[in-house]
Image (cartoon, rainbow, N blue to C red):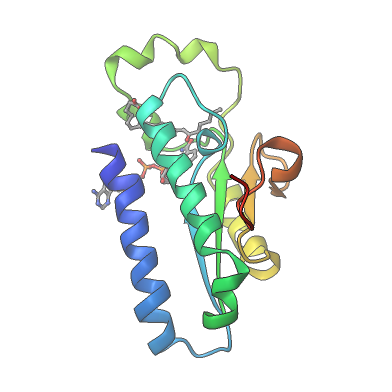
Length: 158
Ligand SMILES: NC(=O)C1=CN([C@@H]2O[C@H](COP(=O)(O)OP(=O)(O)OC[C@H]3O[C@@H](n4cnc5c(N)ncnc54)[C@H](O)[C@@H]3O)[C@@H](O)[C@H]2O)C=CC1
Ligand SMILES: CCCCCC(=O)/C=C/C=C\C/C=C\C/C=C\CCCC(=O)O
């Protein structure tokens, strides 16, 4: 279920915006799609295995559709936000088994307003394909893939 809602629905609606809605209806020269992933989409998170997998999918999809090869054809930027723990209702919906691990995590829940403010900043300043972290109420910053993980594929590497 979480894969359907978090990953498949994100892919479906982004594809619709990218290939159909924005080409037909946008007013400016550029369109922007910002997907909501999570820090659990950058690092595997033991409290939410299925959720973490779904958000890794959102990050990978965003980077792939956010490749500049696409932008040259469409002038649509695709980016993602990766919030850390944020004070919303979502935490009340955890499955019973996983609740026993809640004390393993040591963050404070940031207020939801910071997500809105960060969204506006990324909308104005973010580059195509960029992934942004919002955690512990700190200013939003871009995730540095080069120092953290394998690079995305831009040439034959196998
Ligand atoms: N709160 C947090 O700590 C974090 C949240 N996120 C992400 O932020 C996004 C928003 O989550 P929150 O505001 O925290 O959660 P929330 O539980 O407060 O809000 C989620 C909303 O999604 C709606 N929803 C759920 N299933 C749906 C469906 N099948 N069709 C249509 N709407 C549906 C709910 O009715 C609710 O309004 C989610 O993608 C979540 O994964 C990411 C990182 C951290
Ligand atoms: C430091 C980690 C920050 C993680 C932030 C985040 O994305 C928080 C999410 C909070 C709650 C998720 C709640 C429900 C997830 C839905 C289903 C979980 C199913 C269990 C599973 O295997 O994932």
